[in-house]
View 1 (cartoon, rainbow, N blue to C red):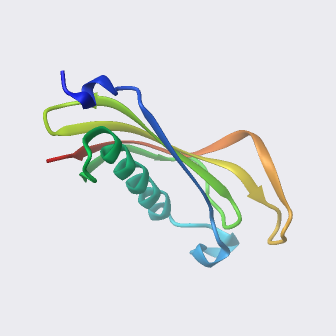
View 2: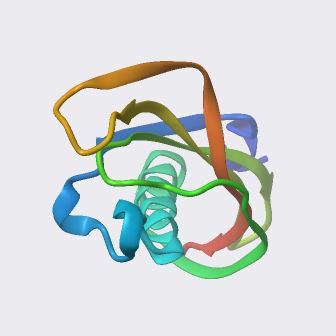
View 3: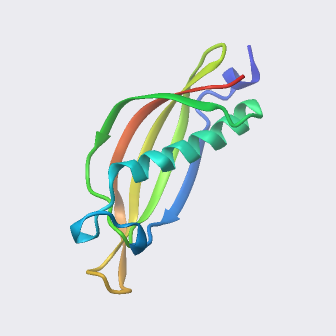
Length: 127
């Protein structure tokens, strides 16, 4: 069994504030590619932790855009290692809004429970 196989179930989490400068559409909405880029970042850390290499994203499957992401949000992104192959790794990805800004002001609310905004399954490859 490889070291990576022993780590199935490992979860890596990133959190970030979404600045208003990143809004792409009316109503301070972001495009879906914004969260996919965050998925790439968290999957990169997963590969470093499991294999000592940044790895490469090979594909996404079952990407679900469930709710909008807005400027002023705090987003939390998880990657959970679910399968280890010889060179490929499968990660389950989830993005949640944990805090949301109020109407373009500096006021914001902590969301309990958080809003799940995007889910996906990804395949990464490592050397």
